[in-house]
Image (tube, rainbow, N blue to C red; front, side):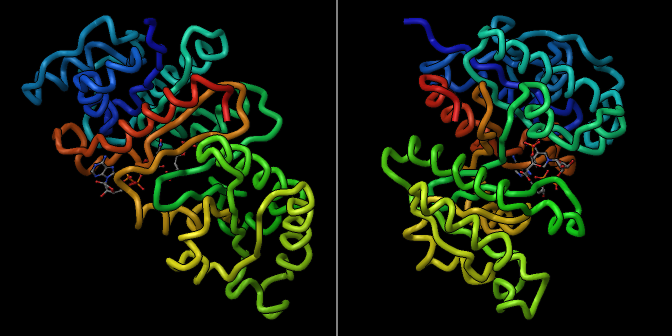
Length: 319
Ligand SMILES: NC(=O)c1ccc[n+]([C@@H]2O[C@H](COP(=O)([O-])OP(=O)(O)OC[C@H]3O[C@@H](n4cnc5c(N)ncnc54)[C@H](O)[C@@H]3O)[C@@H](O)[C@H]2O)c1
Ligand SMILES: N[C@H](C(=O)O)[C@H](O)COP(=O)(O)O
């Protein structure tokens, strides 16, 4: 049986990505259902393996892109060279996925400051993917058994959020999420939409009536499709256990509205999935963890879950 080839991008060389890739390549279960290929720098992987007294990686599972002078990398440091290398690994993986050379992409974390220092004009993976694959609509969803959240806006400052909330964008995120969760759970999902303002605006008392003007009509339009979706709920109580138990996914208006509850409840095993692409892409739910980089203590759970979900999705059309 031919196993699906999955590109695993090494992420920022100065972060925890490389050591997590080393752990992943030693995982017998992963290698029983897919052929992982780390897109990165072989010399850097060898340097970290030697430093930690771990086995060096099997060359058959590394695509050496030779993107950085390994000896120049300082663990835990923001470096333009590292941002450029992480971008190189990632764009090669996207191009290979688009060309059908790999079945899916899984990303280890990159550092947004290093990416920016390298002059890359995108804040993160999600935006690079949307541009490079010419996706008409896409969104970030983080999913775990306990909680799933999709984001209407993501890597922007809070003062920009209200202007970015449109009827069309909210309907798109509801539709993309409903389609993904229907396929992941094998049944029509139930979605809950959060308001933007405290107490969902309290009928115009807080904010600029974003709930009445934009969110309520978008929820009504999605219901008419028909999608089982309701809201907007006051965000502070939307994540109470009594709401979570019947909710397959939340539609959140901004990054931390969804990712604070998600990471508090499921940091070890949540997976980031980009919806709406022509290719499959999943990711860890954590960052470069510069405070613990190259110490060999980083938890590999989210990366293992991300590879598992990518393999599952690669047998179908992308979400
Ligand atoms: N998928 C991605 O590429 C991704 C995701 C999130 C953040 N980031 C980026 O990573 C950088 C650092 O972000 P941050 O400091 O806000 O968050 P972070 O997730 O890197 O770290 C937050 C805390 O979680 C801990 N942590 C993170 N991953 C861990 C792991 N695998 N095992 C054990 N502990 C872990 C860290 O030690 C730290 O205490 C930023 O540039 C951010 O934008 C990238
Ligand atoms: N917003 C994500 C998180 O906090 O986990 C993270 O920054 C990763 O985003 P990209 O996959 O777009 O890099």
